[in-house]
Image (cartoon, rainbow, N blue to C red; front, side, top):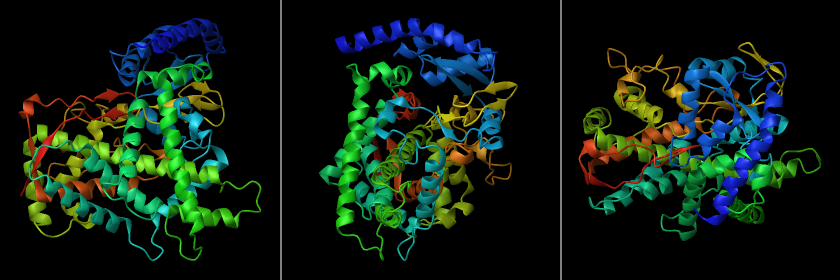
Length: 494
């Protein structure tokens, strides 16, 4: 370990000792918060880079303290929710109380409360309402989202055919095509697959997602007030996101110079038009900071989560080839070899739909969920959560809740099928979270996953380079996100 990193860990341990008195003082205020472990042992869990991920540490604490407990992120108490019932009660039944965005200090220094994903209060409500409107009806005489995905899937198939069955790492094949869908919405056009700037952007997004999942990011979230001044890997994510912000800002300048208010081309144009309309309002949320950071929120989320799910899904199909065979049969029966898959096909393809849901459930791309915050003093399960308390709703604990999924740790598409083979919804299926802060791009992501999986498997069979039994589906990194392992496969034309 580099000297700066070792020093940072040593200082963090010293800080933990210093802050333990503060933590115990907070704990003793009338027993308001749920019970939980002492600060020192939990910090130890976070610092053991080679041991269990934070999510697994939380799940072990659930066995001792139940579905609702408190941990200390440094001196800061955080309430953790496990299982479908506790998460639903907070995010759905008490949606208003839990509608704040909790602290993610490792990226907050880039955003400072701006942008729809990390905003709070009226700013969040205004930006979310505006963003949803643009994403939902970004027609304005232009192509639908489904048509954009179908077109982009066609470009992907062309690239995959060029591989001629040779081994490939699918990572950037998938991230390029998925990113181009959201790019066409926010930037008004797609990128060429060989565009060097585009490839650099995708590399930065991929690396940022990995960095957000390292123990270094978690350590920063605990002691951001000090660690922002210290050297170490925890600073890498800051510089990556700053580069991404600079790219978005350059796109905004191009759009401003060529804007036609009567014919908005993309999300950026729509936002700029709204900025001009509100230019005399000193309290408007339609300003340059919110434009750049909301666009970055959409671009980042619209690229990494869907492409990671696709990549993980293909790995699962390699490990369970009998599932791929059944999908091929359903595709051949419903779509055929030549018709372009459409969203309307999904209701006629229950098995494929079930497999996609099971892929999302098992891969659990964001197991910790994004932290929430209670916006007022809130009574919850016999405890009083003071206003401002951060809350982690563990989505992974819902997606693997044994009360709702018969084999929570297994790949079992029947979780989403009834006895007659019809698709069956499951209320504990929450990969996009739930409640008022549910993912903005849920509808688009669901559409992408179905159209990409069916388009690829309509045209190709997947072939593994190793026997299925030897395929390891353990995440490469597990923290804020579950990062799929690196692998190669061959795509054989059908």
